[in-house]
Image 1 (cartoon, rainbow, N blue to C red):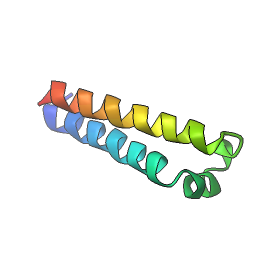
Image 2: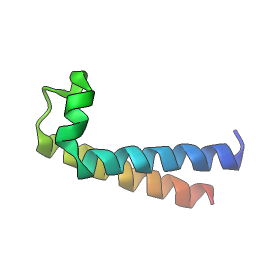
Image 3: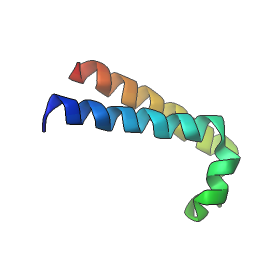
Length: 61
């Protein structure tokens, strides 16, 4: 896997995490499978995704 592709995948993870962290209720509306998760759980998941994405991006670059 190229560094650019790995970096792009890391950024996707960061963006997904930002969406989950910033607007968990809106994300629930569009992602029916997540409807059973609480907003707090979504925020935690989003925050974890942001941290993992940023850490992975740091390792890649």
